[in-house]
Structure formats: structure tokens, C-alpha cells
Image 1 (cartoon, rainbow, N blue to C red):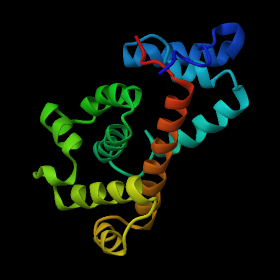
Image 2 (tube, rainbow, N blue to C red; image 1 turned 90 degrees about the horizontal axis):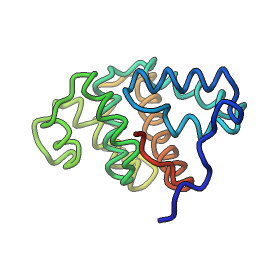
Image 3 (cartoon, rainbow, N blue to C red; image 1 turned 30 degrees about the horizontal axis):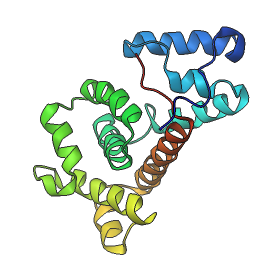
Image 4 (cartoon, rainbow, N blue to C red; image 1 turned 120 degrees about the vertical axis):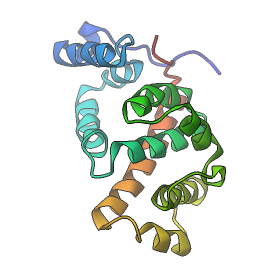
Length: 177
């Protein structure tokens, strides 16, 4: 795989407000300004729209943070997205996930130890990743635990991180230092 296809932008390329936002994001995550932000920020209008949408899913979504991180980390693992995985390990820890949870996330629904709700969520993520749909059986099980708003959010969260993994991979965005 080649190096990063579009270099992360500095203050001049992404503008002062986004540059300050990216620096603050780096402080929060204890990294340099996130390469994802400084790369996508080169298209300022699109970045602002994407960020507004993404914030509605995480961290301001209806799903509990622990479950959101399970979804994101499972998608990151399935997609082989080192960037997403590393970034969300830190966020997952803040949401209460530990090393044993991270190993189970890599194994997926067959790992055992999941609550029935978590298992339904993981099965839905597997279906979405494999076939861009959720089987009727898994949908029925999922909606035993999630209301309509949560079910919509789950589908959009998993699909969003699938899309983001594609963007990160295609632009060859490097993990944050």
C-alpha cells in the first residue's frame, strides 16, 4: 500500500477554526491532531457537514456509548481499519470496555459472554458487513431490545463506519502519532 494520498492540511489549508478543532481533538485523544480531521478538512464544507452528521451518531446518539464502541470496533476489525481500531480502543476504554472485551470483539458473536442485547447488535453488524442487510431473523431479535430510533441509529452507525473505513483506506490516512 502506498503512503497517504492526500497530505493532512495545516492551518493554511484547513482554516483556523478547523485547525483549532483538530488540535483540541488531539489533546482529548492524547495524539497529534487527528489525521482524519486534517485530511478531510481540506474539503471544509464537506467536513463540517460530515462532522455534524457523525456527532449525531457518536457521541450524541441514543445507543449507550459502550454499545456504540462495540459496533465501531467490530466494523473496524472486520474492515481491517487500523486507524479506526486504534482510535476507538481509546474511546472504548473510556466507555468501560477492557482488554477482554476487545478480544471478544475481534472474535465476534461467537466469543460468548455477550448479553442478549449485545449479541443481537453484533449479529446485526455481521449481517450488515457481509450482505449490506440484516436478516429477518436477526432483525426480529434485534428489535426485541432496540426501539425504532435505536435500530435506525444502529444501522446508520455501522454503515457510517463502513464508509469511513473505505475513505480511510482509499486516502491511505495514517494512524495518529
